[in-house]
Amino acid sequence: GDSVTQMEGPVTLSEEAFLTINCTYTATGYPSLFWYVQYPGEGLQLLLKATKADDKGSNKGFEATYRKETTSFHLEKGSVQVSDSAVYFCALKDVNRDDKIIFGKGTRLHILP
Amino acid sequence: DVKVTQSSRYLVKRTGEKVFLECVQDMDHENMFWYRQDPGLGLRLIYFSYDVKMKEKGDIPEGYSVSREKKERFSLILESASTNQTSMYLCASGQIDSRYGYTFGSGTRLTVV
Picture 1 (cartoon, chains in turn yellow, blue):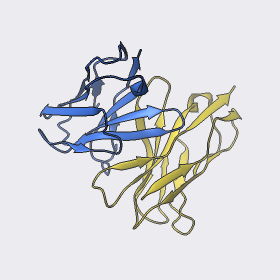
Picture 2 (cartoon, rainbow over the protein chains, first blue to last red; picture 1 turned 180 degrees about the horizontal axis):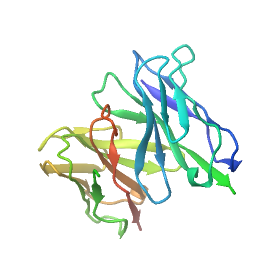
Picture 3 (cartoon, rainbow over the protein chains, first blue to last red; picture 1 turned 180 degrees about the vertical axis):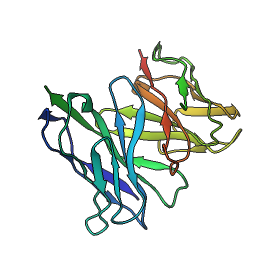
Picture 4 (cartoon, rainbow over the protein chains, first blue to last red; picture 1 turned 90 degrees about the vertical axis):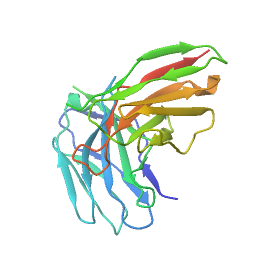
């Protein structure tokens, strides 16, 4: 079945460092891809999304490009802030299961001042 | 702002008790979901509902049931709580392809002793 694999954390970086969180997927067809973020004590919220190959999703300085050839959707940010500390989830919409989403296991990010 | 409200933030129950977790959304969403979140396992779908009185099993429905008597309310029921149901429970509602994707509640951390 469809699945999402993302890099294990925790990831610890200094403020202003460059961030990459890797995400790869396995799917039949062409799923929509998402990054969700969970700040401490809160529920998940949508960070960005891409619905077709070569689309780039972006929000709050984060970017991810839908790469069909490598089945990847890596999350990047050029200069992280302490406020970016959170858990990040890569996810896909299973095209065969209406409106259900498959989440990766999450990557915890710690940003040090 | 769309609100998904979960009735309790923290809950401690005894083994064998019947437990009700309540979720209410205020945006007239048809779709509602219950997930559990565990370290190293990410989010796993328990049950979901596309309409009033409608329910479908997710990936891990064993030991759970749900109720959707009104559009805005989706309840998760643990028929006889067990220690392996100690977890964070997240409710979500919405359309995956909408601008904001799913909207999640802040979660209920349930401990079964």
